[in-house]
Length: 231
Image 1 (tube, rainbow, N blue to C red):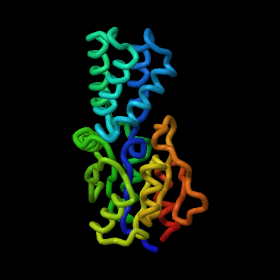
Image 2 (tube, rainbow, N blue to C red):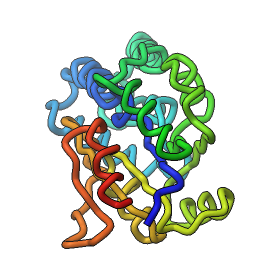
Image 3 (cartoon, rainbow, N blue to C red):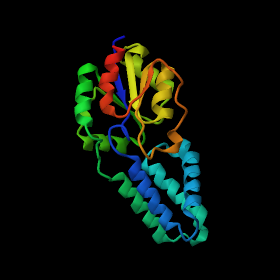
Image 4 (cartoon, helix red, strand yellow):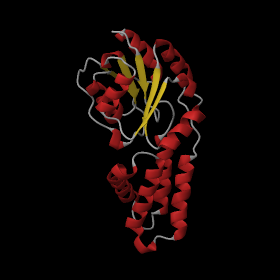
């Protein structure tokens, strides 16, 4: 089987992302410490995020709105204008954080581009994801950019059809079992799971058992060699 298309996740696959969200979350925990313990605030925030996903989608803007909603729930009438301004400032900082690539990403993408066309498949806010890709300096290495509201098997099927390839001729690599790996496998593609520390619990899922088209890799730099074993 020859691989003719390589799909890659962006956040926490090519560059650091969750550590910035976690730092912003810690800032919220500190702001709300007079009203709730950190564990309570964190649980409320996670529940609020998941509840709001159908409304706001993924990304820093929806996260900021969920932080404000969580603060309103916990502080009630004691929530001050200054606290809301603090949350908004934290959200703006999250949107403006520098794009910090994982080690060796540029070289790895250059190797992968020699194997087949690269397509970035990422979810989140369109403007924010576009700005991060531009800041990364990696844009010219990709033959396609797909910024989607969510990743489902049909997302990948549509993509494969657009590139006129069979699913078995495509690979998807990313750090999310729920969003990157399971939908790609369901669509018939190969999938490489590259876990990162501090991953979002919402993106976790049970790994497939003995699936012939699945692999777990330690780092993105291992992907070209794994693809060679498929070929």
